[in-house]
Figure 1: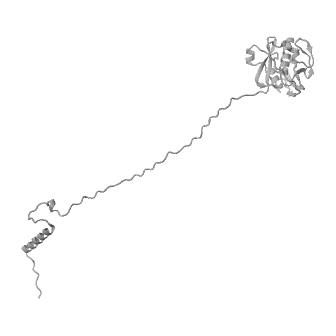
Figure 2 (figure 1 turned 180 degrees about the vertical axis):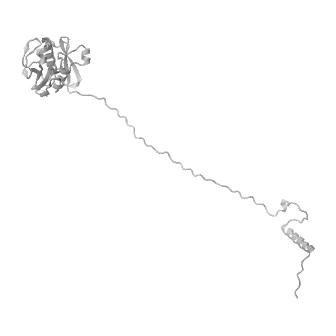
Figure 3 (figure 1 turned 45 degrees about the horizontal axis):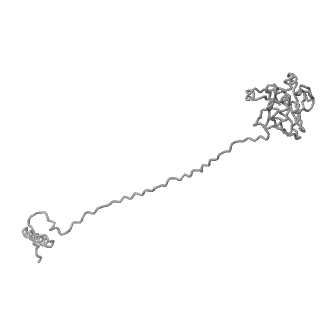
Length: 248
């Protein structure tokens, strides 16, 4: 025969609950107290643990880029030497100073037959005329051509030379002779007209045909003129013939 379960009554249930509570309180060390109150620290059986602290470490990586190294090219200072023009033999061109002839040295022109004739054709520079110098050769086409062979220069004159007064002819011939015989290798000068021998006046005013030298016109040289001694060496130089109008 099955025995029916007995359901505890309310008062019995409460007694069971009170007994269990008392038993639990005795095991936890909490003194029994029927009143509702907050627990004291001594009644807390465990020690509260501090909340964990979260530390966040931020690591920043800094990359330092070294500055670019620029190598400048070496600066080299080179002092250029002064420009010096060396002339093998300077050119002395003779101009008229009053009633005499006087040389003017051209240090920037090499003494050759061509440069000498061209200087006589061109006439004195402005600086020369400012010093009162002039030329007895009035036009560039008065000297047609010039050659030199075996120390003797041959100057071919134009017909316009015959239109000059006698004194001017003498000064013009003296200019040509002293300018040309100051060149290396030239000691004598003879004159032609249209490729025929021409008689020209000497320093004394006497017409002379053939080769002439400085000695024939020394009386026309300015007294203070220092002269260099030209070297007379056999040489041959030909100056291109100049046509009328100053063209070659």
